[in-house]
Each structure stands twice: as structure tokens, then as C-alpha cells.
Image (cartoon, rainbow, N blue to C red; front, side, top):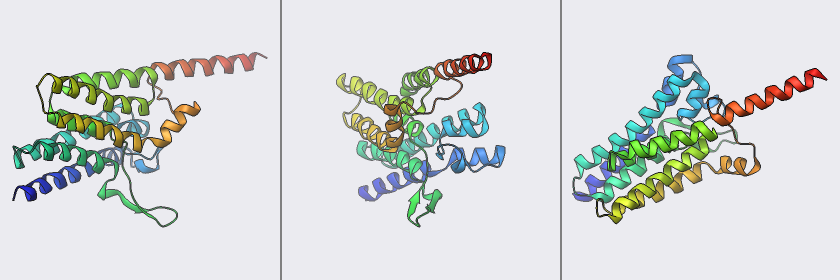
Length: 232
């Protein structure tokens, strides 16, 4: 019976994570299909590109909420099963990245599941395990995003932040070490999802969002270069 409840908790986590919040909000706001905008992902950064800061921020928050609810639901279904709580959070990340609601065939006829990169659901699952994670990790991730301007780097920072926070708490006896496993596997999922972006980072051509220090500096540099060309 316990195993069946654990499986239900994990499957529910996946289904909650699979809800394509960004796709829905952008469609309602602009009529656009978010899968056809820029990176094609359904997370907050791409929602921002498609529909502005408000929709991007709302997408990010709701992506956190759906994973948090997934972990909370697992704690109600299986109160004493720490592993099930961790797996429910990880399932929510996988649901977000590979949504059953966004199944399709690619240009070569191969079956695939679309979704996001997983940063906000990773944070949401961590919040479900320990609520104060939000204040620490969200602030760090936002700082990286709005300075460096690269959503991929901010995403990886979120996973790393969860690992550090949970490892410190576990070493103090404030939470089980299995929660650190959540952070480690979440980071692996994020790295896997961001393989193309990591290659672009090393190549020096990763996207930089406009509302960041790096984006402002780049725009200023391009404007200056354009003015210099016009003066010749």
C-alpha cells in the first residue's frame, strides 16, 4: 500500500509539473505559441521575451508554485516517506521540462516532449522541502540573471544554491541528507536541459536579456559602435 501511495505522489508531481504555465499565459496575452518564440522553451525567460516582464514574472512564480504544491501533496499522501517527497519534486521538474501536455512529432517524425529548462520548478520543489529556500536561492538567482543577463547561468546557479543550502542544513541536523540528493539530481537535470546553452556560453554567443546590467552594457556598446560608423 505504501509503495502505491508513493507512486501516486510521484505521478501527481509529474502531472503538476507538466502544466505549461508560460505557454498558457503567453497565449492568453498575445495569442502567440511560446514554442515558436526564441528558444522555444516554456519557462519565465522565454515568456518574458514573448509577452513582457509581467507575464515572464507570473510564469516564473507559478512554475515555482506548481512544484511546491507537488511536494506538499506528496507530504500529505505519504507523510513519513522522505524519498517520495524528493522524487515528487524531481518529477515536477521533469514534467516541466518534458510535459506530457506538449507531446509532438519533430520535423523528422520523432516523438518528443517539449517544456522549459527547469530552474523555477527546481526551486519550487526545494521550497516544498524547506520554505525558506525561496528567499535565499531566488535572490541569488535573480541577482545573477539581472547582472550577467544569461538565464542559463542563473538556472545553474539555482541548482547549485539548493545543493549548498540543503548541505549546510543537513550537516547541522536540520533536515535529512536525502534532501541534498534532491539538489544534486535537480542540478544534473538542469545541466542536461541546458547543454546547447552551455556550448554557447563557452563559444561566447549565449543570449543576454535586455533588462540586465550585461544587456544594458551590450546595448550601450552597440550604440556607440553604430555612432562611430555613422561618423565616418
